[in-house]
Image (cartoon, rainbow, N blue to C red; front, side):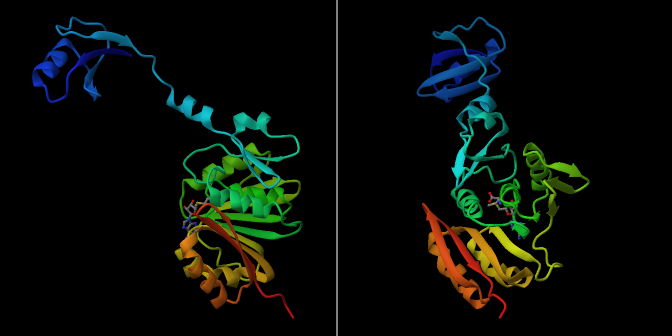
Length: 271
Ligand SMILES: C[S@@+](CC[C@H](N)C(=O)[O-])C[C@H]1O[C@@H](n2cnc3c(N)ncnc32)[C@H](O)[C@@H]1O
């Protein structure tokens, strides 16, 4: 990219007119200097100098800065950094795109860490607001028998399927399989048709929505089922705590990273 750099400001019409007339394709002002962009060198009747700047590959620079993120025994990494996952860690490969959930946000990390501590063999799991599919994948890799990820944003569903394939799952129609266990992603909010069917419900949304949905969460969870909610700012914790108390959740515990909280609770066990 060819740039002619000359002293001046965008308000100096005599200077800018000269640059446009000489063939500039764009003008920019930085610290009292005008930068005029040209497709090729031209006669410019002004004092200044030509600079040939390499086009910067922003995508490559941004990719270079991404680092794998550790959460419990999982390490979340983009596919091109697979080799950087320490051997003792379990990789979750997520390529960044339009959907939230690369592990670089505290709420995602807190949730993956909490999932990594659970025994999920044979369990049914619902991930509400699945985004990139990261929490649903973590639950499946942690041993869950069946996982459903739902999101109201249609761009997330293809991204979640892509990420699942990166992690070695096999897709047939809308069902992903891994070691005999199944994962599906659907564009939806809560899965209200499945009353009392989940052993674990995970939702990284926000406090006000948890407050609104707490009764719906309870209705679709089995007795003694685990709830993991995050996306909760510290000062909104009382709202979530009172919603969980209202709906009869028990054993409410919290974890914190910076200003973000994760809340765990369970439904009453059957007597
Ligand atoms: C903060 S992101 C969480 C993504 C991922 N689960 C994670 O933990 O990184 C929240 C996601 O919830 C979705 N969402 C918001 N409201 C929802 C609702 N009522 N039902 C289902 N998904 C919802 C958004 O589209 C977004 O993808």
